[in-house]
Image (cartoon, rainbow, N blue to C red; front, side):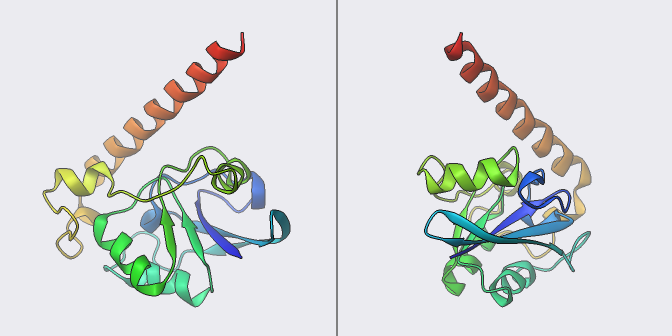
Length: 161
């Protein structure tokens, strides 16, 4: 199985997961044999900065990924991944290693349109390229995702001691 993970850098399993797959600078590909990591590879996102609907899912498909882990994605991207037979999974955060382990452990599953896509009133089908133009909205979404991640970590720490 090959898992693609949206990433902020190319540090293989120690890469930081990007909150939005289409605007991430890199993808980390993780090849697995059952639950054993066989190989990892960082790949530049050729559409970093700007992309049209369908381009990034098609690129991930060309990399022969079976699963796409990311912080968030729009509803249209989820549909494209389904059409390519790729399992889209949102809610990933932390490092690539942590996200892959969460996915394999069953704690990370399913995909829902990101808040930004919903706030633009796009539901499952955002208007072509519209949310890409809203830098402030993207930053707000990323700040909210980081806030939720911090709450989750603080909750886990509170349960530990």
